[in-house]
Image (cartoon, rainbow, N blue to C red; front, side, top):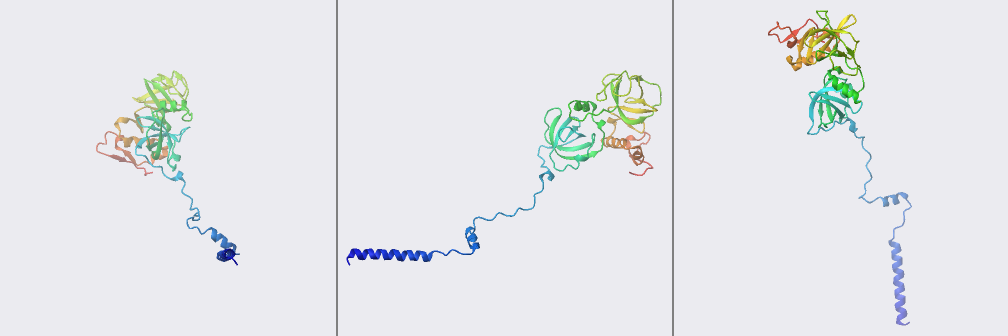
Length: 304
């Protein structure tokens, strides 16, 4: 046998042994299907997705974060046809607001004219203004006629609030007199004047002798510098000028009373007659002048 033949035989033998060795080293496929799944998921770098946790609290119930440029504003609340409401800010005017807090429990209890304190952001210089409110506190219940009538009339004309008749009012002696919803007891029956014209109940009288209620020729009687009585059937209705307040038939200038007394008097006058009888405390400012040295008056009634 020549050398070429021997060399070729050696090469073929080596190749055959090598192929046999490779077949023995290969793993035998498992008949268990789970083994195949395990083989496919053994990569430790890929974790199975975690199960969803409990539902997060709704963002609508989380108090809004108050920005640093927000400030406290006090005034009267009005229900708005756009936005969440209108705040008629003291010594400023009406501002339509968006309520940022998810807790609307206080807002939902408010009525037109309620006195409130709100934490509000910067105000856009429009009319009415616009702002965002972050919290609200009810100071005391009020009435719609606590808002300036010209402001109410303008907001109704713009469609910002629902159209409702304004409080009965008339113009006399270059002064606007607004109905209080309470009765009056004039000491003199002589009329000081009468209505010369009657305008729509959604408008504010602006000329002497003009009213937004009643009939032409209805008379009025002067009771005090800022108080008038108008006959209404078998009794008289009490009308007051801005800045004039009344307590049990006596009249006061608002500027002569403390802020606490003005707030107390508003709450008192908003009570029904039976509720007024249950009041056991009267501020000193409202007491007769001969009660010198007394800081408050206790009545015989029980506290409400």
